[in-house]
Image (cartoon, rainbow, N blue to C red; front, side):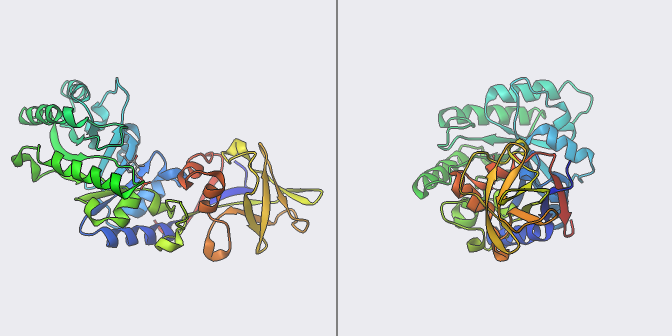
Length: 352
Ligand SMILES: *Cc1c(COP(=O)(O)O)cnc(C)c1O
């Protein structure tokens, strides 16, 4: 790990973003989505901050991440939810740690039951039935939904699972598509036996929909990107939504070559390579970056070794944002931060 390249993680900014979302979606609750490592921001500090703000749900990609959080002391009052599993997943550790499970098919339900009802732990897994409302990524097809609900209902009667939630994931790409998904989700609710509906947590929206559409919020919204101050793109900046980027990526000049300064970070650290037109900021100016494998050239004749270059950071400081990088690359901000190597030190500021 080089001391000359680091990602600053501003937990105060994270807290402000989270509060903004919480106020906006209330009375729906917020599930803080961390996937594997809080989108490259560092899972422990982010989860601690979220819990400090009253968040009662944390969303992880795979169960092992949730088991790890519980082992590190996350209290049982904070519910964990995971949704990505291997076909031969052993769900025992997840059930014991109280990680609630997204379930998309009767086969997966059988697997959950067969791996958890044999163990000595005695923990009854909580399941959230997933319906595919048009995205086509995972979830029961509408025609398979009644069978999935009936199977969960029967396992719940037998005390082998708890029927805790129902959910879906939507495109958030067009209003019409999202409206169709919301309507499909509403009608899927009606197929759940009435005596089960009361205890169900219903969740559909991620950041963009939760912010824009009251009808998408149901009981709970799953928010990743907006918490980190990452905007949805398409010309919408974080500041226009009232969000502050949480991560700023910086490096120190280690050398000079001709008219350029050299910083010790490159594609090998997860930066996008061979793209022209990316800018950073140094000494209050924009500077053109040329990213190589392990080093990046900063076009500026005045920078000296030891000077700090910001690759992306905050608009209010005149720095390029992650959003600018994403637009230049034709991608979304998340894609950039999740690729940043663990070799880059995360320096946390603010209180968790
Ligand atoms: C990543 C993810 C989210 C969070 O999405 P953001 O746009 O980052 O808020 C929510 N739900 C699921 C299923 C996800 O995979």
